[in-house]
Amino acid sequence: MRDALLTVRDLKIYYRTLYGYVKAVDGVAFELRDGEVLGIAGESGCGKSTLGNGLVLLKPPMKYVGGEAILDGKNIMALSQKEIKRIRYEKISIIPQYAMDALNPTKKIRQIVDDLLREHNSSFEEKRELIEERLAIVNLSKKVLNMYPIELSGGMKQRLVMVISTLMNPDVLVADEITSALDVSTQRSVVQMLYEMKEKKAMKSIIFITHDLAVLYQIADRIMVMYAGKVAEIGPTEEMVRNPLHPYTKMLLASLPKIGVRFVNERLKGIPGYPPNLLNIGPGCRFRERCPKAFAKCEQDPPIFDLNGRKVSCWLFERGDER
Image 1 (cartoon, rainbow, N blue to C red):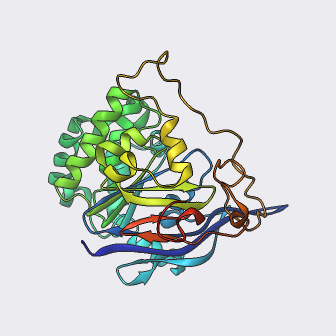
Image 2 (cartoon, rainbow, N blue to C red):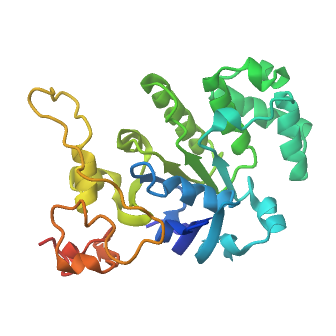
């Protein structure tokens, strides 16, 4: 087994409101191994993007409440703004969810890149060869460097942000919903480009956040499924898809269309009910109101059970196997 590059323990990131705290990430724990792609999946509002952004760009209204994220021997959640700015892009970087809007519209691309590099004691000229190499990987001409963001299409801006976010060869890259605004064929090409960048050592490991399990099946070594701010299940991608353990993971997969299966032969199965309100939420399994296997003990918070490397947060597995 590869060494852990990033270790997250009992991490809590809340949103402060006039009515109390929204517990968007509430006691999340996982490891990101050196050289792996860890996929994080779950429906909208499960906390996956809050988790990814909190690790890199923690800012109001997000509030770090507790836990730790150990990278290079340091709890990055406890670093000052000056310290986190120093390691951002070098140790940990992010391709934001709305990458198409992440570029300053008043500056040419070359100036945007040069500003970033100068913050890290480098310059455009020093990195010119690397910049042009990375542009070629994502099928962009070096002519884009003399353009303004408004002159680029949405897909071009998406790929350009992929290049900018990896210029310092970070240990950890968070890719937050980078395929959500793209059509299916473009999604596939973007995933392939990201994987090629990893092969060329543009980053060591990737946290790939998406609601689309089909995308994760193409790229992820392991998948972590989140529900309502908590970890539901973690395991190797093939095992998660072929043999999901947590009731939520099973129902999530059952709601997706299958290749070669016609609607008239097998209808998609939605998950009944709605996710819980995370504002001042109390104890208990957060999926219990929608779970067909819920029982009395689900009124208590389930721990994470380790089943030969598979991790699942469900009382059904208290004795090592499902009821």
